[in-house]
Image 1 (cartoon, rainbow, N blue to C red):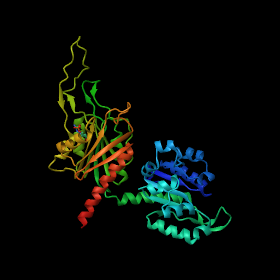
Image 2: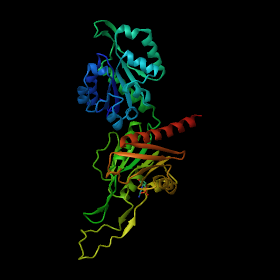
Image 3: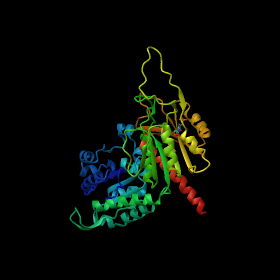
Length: 414
Ligand code: C5P
């Protein structure tokens, strides 16, 4: 079985049709494939399946109400519509299709559908007469023109007792269509076959056999970037300092401890098309590592003479040979984030800088935490991404990298 669905995010909108019960089975099968499902249940949908069953199977909160203050505070329709890879409407009723075709936004489902910038698939299900009605067929044409993918309904016995077209596509067919969608997205990506080196995590710089210099980096942001790039077809070498994270599927990981090891591993992994230096490399190490544990010296302090570590990002950026076409650095700052980051881009000679504020707010730091808010500084301008999960930020960055390579390929064609 292909792993293409692994860890994909699906926004599932369950419409008000009798076939909603089949969607429970669909959720189960998708969960087996490790799809992360966020369900929206329409008012009609809730007449056929309960929020409890949907939530229990999807292992997620069910979103129902556009005007719910808590939902809007925690996760509004804009975030719901953006923090996904794909939107699936199943069952798509005649009413939902009509609203989508007309651009009506009068509940959470339709508002989210109008707000989304992600691909949408619909699996229609209704009585044959409704399906074949010129109004529905007109709406179907309009939706296809708008770029919405249709999972064609099957023919046979319908729940209403009639026989004909309009049955919700079978669960395996829906899953196959979703797989095809992700496979073709990967195949069309401008990053297919490109080699990307990602550095991630902290480094440990041994002082003696038991002590080391380190920092709070968890590696989460770098690992998420590696994973998002693999999703877009890249071949990723992840050079990782010590972390507690599993290696993302499809990524080749090289484990290192020190900045010098990381530098050597990055060099050995060249050539690469892109380098993303996310690692929080220790700036300094002690000059040499004591062979024995350093003992307390009756009130005196040990003389820990520090020397500078190699700057991997700078070295990569300034290579005259085998410089990756796109070198991206991170700027972890605690103040004047944008100014410092712009200066860092110049100083290091990298192409892009992803700047974030790593100071503590409410006792939570970006370093080690699950969310991030960043400013992406490129040669063309700046993009500010509000606080979101690190995997969301990773996907946004991967999409920008892909866009750059796509534009380049298009220019070369001209
Ligand atoms: O100079 P500073 O540590 O703030 O720069 C951060 C950026 O430089 C990050 O992209 C980090 O991965 C990279 N870096 C590096 N080698 C170092 C220090 C930082 O690659 N020794």
